[in-house]
Amino acid sequence: MAKAKNYLMWNMTRKCNFRCHYCYYPHDNSPVQENLPVDRLRQFLDGTGREWVVGMTGGEPFLYPNFVDLCAALTETHKVSVDTNLSLTKEVARFARQIDPKRVHDLYVALHVEERERRGGMDAFVRNVNELTGRGFNVVVNYVLHPDLIHRYAEDRDRLAEQGVTITPRPFKGVHEDREYPAAYPAEAKAHFSDHPDAGKKTVFDFCGVLCNGGRSFIRMEPDGTVYRCAGEKTVMGNLLTGIALYEEPMPCRARRCPCLGPNHVVLAGAESCQFEGIKKANVGNAGEARALYAEALATDPAMSTARINQGMILWEAGETERAEAEFRQAVADDPTDPYAAGNLAAALALRGQFPPARAVVREFMDSDAHKLDKRFLEQLEANLNAGESPAGWPRSTTAILPRSRRTVTPVLVSKPS
Image 1 (cartoon, rainbow, N blue to C red):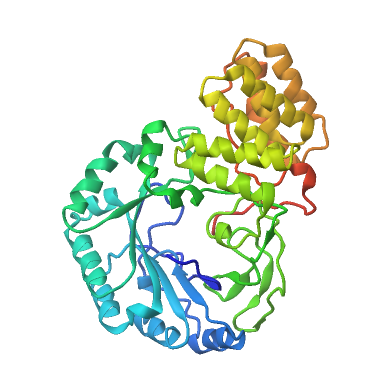
Image 2 (cartoon, rainbow, N blue to C red):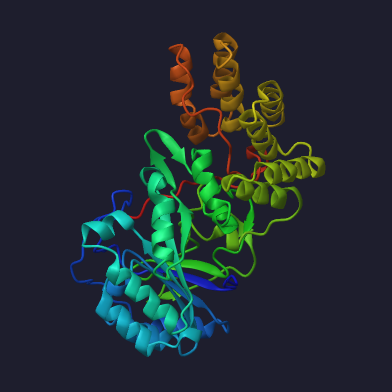
């Protein structure tokens, strides 16, 4: 599926009729109160002189008042993409009948299998998917591979395939049982992603300092009409009701966590591109290709500490712990302000019983001029080392592209929607 050149992510509502345990949105299927005027949205989009894809997400977009009529109005001159659980069958059927499939970029359908089973089964879901695909819509069915679902994914995949529904595994992005995913996925889970290489970019990248078209050809709009640069960086570009001013050229990203579409809009080249592609390969279990890409990044830029950290992780997972430790040590030398470099070196030392030098590595980092958020990131590791405990969850790979020492912007953390 081709990437949308110009994309407005419209977070239409916080309300959702599902109660998935791994989602931070509350269960709430009461009527949506906020209702932005479609004519103002059309006026803004048309005024840019470009065709946009309006990505309609939430919450559950089909809960929005007059949702199908809204889509009909937008698709006269632009396209839509809908992120939905496909549970409101009557509205879905109306959408299928009234909206031209050629004006729909995709339907990004989330299969929350446990919630479906709680609500009575999969039959309605299968019928809705087959109805839409039969009418020519581009339907992508996603299965969030939460750690609790890894054991049943293959059975669910095969059962749905027999009913004409192809599902795509998507990484769970978050913390489960004190482990951060997708980095913590075992080999069994990574094997599920191996046939879906695009899943490799479905992670929380750190693009801080990298040039990005967020605010130019990619923006996010909230239910009240406020427009942000993107989902990760809350720079306000204006409001639909009062006016929006877009950037005229790519600008450095300030977000440490890119939760969604940044990979489609960042401007990468050289070692940065190799680091990005290497992370994608590693996420789907292609360690050999990832290793080659990290090596290419380092050949292009020997001081690319982020690539060296991940090269060390590939070696570590392959059992080459001495070489991995050497890579971590060099990464610390290249960028003393990177918490992954310091944390990985300290963990490698501690795991072979060298607790005093491990503590010294972390203490030196804490005493450095590293960013306060990075110091906070290593507080638990330091506490474990001081107690003589094994460094749980370490060493670990980084999703950062640029080394900390090269960032020319002050980073910010993305917050969960309120």
